[in-house]
Image (cartoon, rainbow, N blue to C red):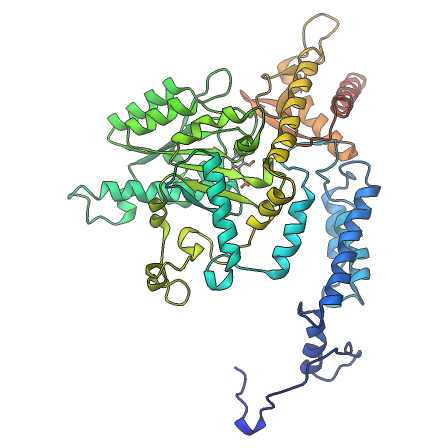
Length: 531
Ligand SMILES: Cc1ncc(COP(=O)(O)O)c(C=O)c1O
C-alpha cells in the first residue's frame, strides 16, 4: 500500500510538460512515469497522436498496396518462433521500429479479407467510414455502460437500435443493445428467453418457491440441425446443458422443417417438458438458408415459446435492394440477432440483439450502487448497462453510424447484393463443371461443393476417396497462400465452401480459385496413383 504523504509535503501545482525520454539508467520510477506520460492521449500530446496513428495507418495502407494474395502460407511454428523471440521487457526506441517489427510478427502473414481470393469464412472486407469510426471511438474511448461514461454515444447507439428495429419491422415497443458478436447476441436472447420461461413456471404455486437450477431441467430449445453452434454453447452457459437443445431436421433446401418442429415440440410437451424457445436462422453459416420464419413463429406461439431469429449472417438483407423480402418474417420474432461485422462490412466487433418488447430486457437488469443504482433508472437516466450482459463496452455503434452517414444503408445493401449475385453465378459454373459437385444451389453468398471428378469410366471418384481428398486440397491451397477456402461436412462427408462477401471479387477471380482447386486435386490424385 502506498504511504500517504503529510499535508505539508504536497505540491499542488506540479509542473507537467514535454518530458525527455529516460536515460538508460533513469533514476526512479517517477522519472519513468513522467516520460511515459508523453504517450498519454491529451491536448499536449495530440501532435504525437496524429503522427503515430498516421504511421500505423500508413503501414496498413502500404501493406494493402503491396499484397497480392490473401495469405503467405506461413505455418504456426514459424510465426510462434518469431513472436516468441520478441523481448517484451525491452521496448523499442519508437513507433517506426515497433511497426517494422510488426511487419515480421503480424502484418506480413495476416489473412487479408479484402483480397478477392479470400473466400472462406464470414469475414468481410471493411468499409472506410467504419474505420474512421473505429479511430474516433477508440481515441475518445467512451464506455457504453452508463450515461456518465458515454453521454452522446448512448443516444447514437439508441438511435441505431431504433433504426435496426424499424428495418426489421419489430414494432414500436422494440429495443435492443449492441454486443460483441452473434454468439453474444444469441446468448443474451436465450438468457432473456430462459428467465422469461422461468418466470412463467413460477406462476405455478407448486414451483413458485423453487430455485433456478430446479426449474431449468424441463426447459428445451428447438433449432435446426444447420443452426450455429452458439445455440448449444448458450444452453450450456445458461446452466441447461448442451442436450437441452433439440435439433430439428431440415428439408432438402437446408431450411428447418416445420413439420419436424411440430413433431418435436409435441413430443417434448407430451413428455412434460417446456418448450422454452424456437431459434430460427436467417442465413445459415453453411448454406445461407433462411428458415421458414412465419411457420416457425406460429409453432413457437402455439407452445408459448420465445421465437428468436439468428440473422447474424442474413441481417444485411435489411438494407438490400433486391433481397430484403427474405427477412420478412422477422416482424414475428421476439428477438433478432444481427451481425454488422458480417454483412454490413464493419470491422470486428459489431453486433446487436433486438427485442420486440422492450420490457423483456428487465430479465437481465441488475442494479449496482456503484454504477447503475435503481434510483438512476427511476430518474430515467439512460444507463445502457441495464440492458447489457457486458459492463465496460465499446462504442461499436459509431462505426455503423458513420457508415450510414457517409455511405448510406442502400450502398451497404448494394455491396451485399453483389456478393449474393456473384454466388449465384459461381453456382452456375460449379453445377456445370464435371470435376465438382455442388451440394445445393446457393441461397445467400455461400457455396458448398466438393472436388469429385468424373473418371474415364464415366462414374465419379468414390465418396471415400473424395472425403480424403477435399480436406487435403483445402490444406494445400491454404499452405500456398494463393487462396483461402473453408471446409465443412454435409451428411458426414467432407466438402469445400466459399463464403463470398467481397463485392469487388469477379467471376474471373473465383474461377481462378476453382482452377487452383482442380489442379491441386488432380495433382494429389496423380501423386497417389504414382506412389
Ligand atoms: C448464423 C450464425 N450465427 C451466429 C454466428 C456467431 O457470430 P460471431 O462469430 O459474431 O459470434 C455466426 C458466425 O459465423 C453465424 O454464422
